[in-house]
Image 1 (tube, helix red, strand yellow):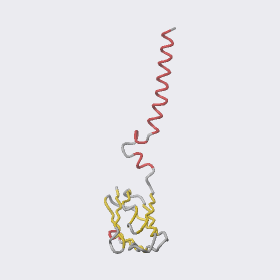
Image 2: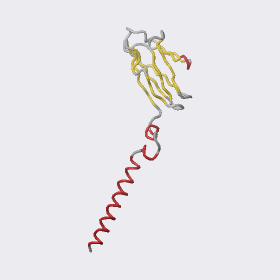
Image 3: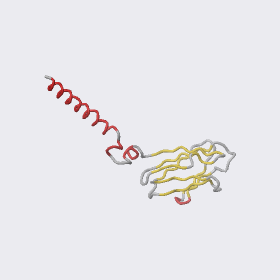
Image 4: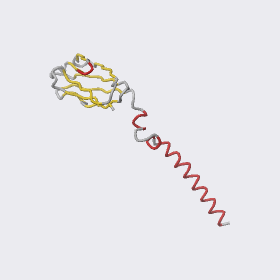
Length: 131
């Protein structure tokens, strides 16, 4: 009788371990998809709102993924700064930034590395880091 109870308890513990342990392995995407599985799952497309003020671009560093669309929405908060334009020299893109009006720039990084952007005078600087 004691042996049968021990076997039943052991079976119950094994069943619980399989039930909860197995589900835990699938609940965490990094467990079964490699190191970057969670990062890749919901990473694209990406939209980033960038404030342009006397302090420059905020945020000034944006992470992106090679081959996936990135939408940047620039909003200049006041006229008391040199951020009246955003320039992506390497991409041959330039957009005027009127005060208080959001301006959208869409890009898709085609290689890894940094893509720089500046204000029209080159004083405010920002970087897109494509991985």
